[in-house]
Length: 472
Image (tube, rainbow, N blue to C red; front, side, top):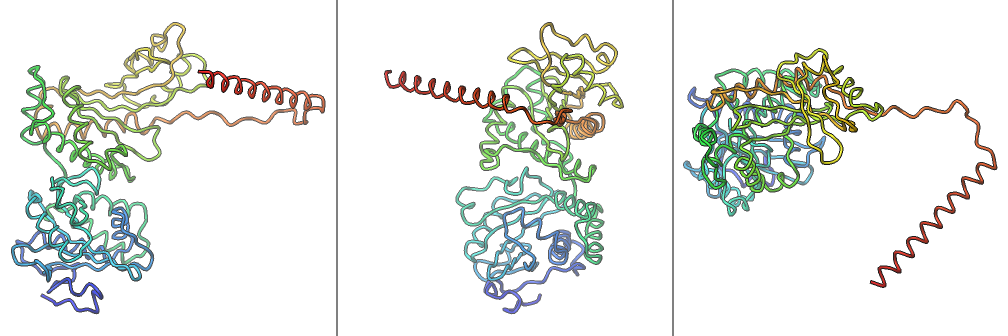
C-alpha cells in the first residue's frame, strides 16, 4: 500500500494514513470484485475529463477546465479510521484554491448498502472534514441526491450523501460515447473499455430485475378486494422498489434511444423525498396504482405510465393538444390518426378530452381509422387527445420477475408504436399581406382615436371600481 504524500493531496494530506491511487488495471485478489470494479471506475474519473466532471457537476460540485480530479482506493483515514470502518475510495476535486472531497462506498452483484456502515462513514467524514459520501451499488434512486437506504436525520447532517447505480454510470458513459462528447482519442479508448468491462457479467453490474416479496402480498390484497394501508411496511417496500424500477426503465430507454431519458419528479418531491413517498403511498392506497412520468427529449409530450393493481394491467400514454386551425372534431382526429398510420392498432386507444368539465370519451384506434365520425359529440369540438397503450398481463402481474419484464416491454412497445411518431401541433407562422402599403392617414387617425377612447374608458371603469371598494 502506497503512502500518499503532501505533494499529491496538498492541504488534504492529513486525511489519510495510506491509500492506493485508483488503477485502470488493478492488481487485486480475484475475490475483490468490488475493489476491482471501483478502481477501474475511479481511474476513468481521473483520465476521461468529461466523464468524471459531468457526473460530479450533476451533484452540484463546481468544476471547470482547470479542475483536477484525484482518486484513491484502499484508503485509511487518520481520524476515526480502522480496519472495521474503511471506505472503499476517496475522490479529491481541486479547482484553484478550492478542494472538495468525497468518500466512496461501492457494492456489486447482490450486495446491498448497509445503513449502519454508511452512518459510520458519515461520522468519519465529519471527523475528517470531508464534504460528501457517494455510494455506488446495483440499487437505484430516482435522483442522485435521493438515496435508496433510509439514513437518520442526525447522520445526514454530518456530510452530503449521493448515490449512483452502476447501471446509471454505465448509461452515462454509453451516452457520452454515442453523442461524441469525448473528443480525445485515447480517452475514448479508455471509456469504451470501461463500458465493455461494466457490461460483462463478471463485473457484477445488473439492472433491477424483480419486485420484492411484498409485491405478491400487496397485489393479492387488492385482487381480493382488500385495502392497502399507507403505513404498512409492505406498501413502503413496494413504493421503494417502484422507484428503483422506474429509474432503471429510464436508463434502459436512454440506451435504446441514445438520449438522456429522465423520470420527471415535481420540484416539491425533488426537495423532499419523504413527501414523495407519502404522496405515492396515498395514490397506491386510494387508486391501487403505481405511476411514473418519463421525459424524453424532443417528443410531443411526457410519457405517463400506470401499473393498475386492480386491473392487473399496464397503461402508457402521451397527451397532445388538438390543432386549433381545424374546426371539427373529425378534422382534428384525422390530423392525429395520420401520425399513427404506421402503428399497429392493437392495444392503442384514443382518449378525447373535451372543453370544460365534460367527461372524456375513448375509442380504439382500429375503429377510428375506419369510422372517425363515431368520436364526434354534438356541439363539441375536442380540445386535446391522449393516446393510450394498454396491456393486460393477467397472472404475470403478481409475479415478481415477470411483472418487471412485462413493464419494460410495454414501455418500449409504446414508444415504438406511439411515442416516436407523435408530433405536437404548432400554429402556422403569420403570412404577410399581399397589399404591403401602409394604411392611409385617415385610417391611422381613426385607429389612434379608437385607442385613446378605449384607454379613457378603461381608466373610467378603474376609477369607478376603486370608488366602490372604498365605499364597502
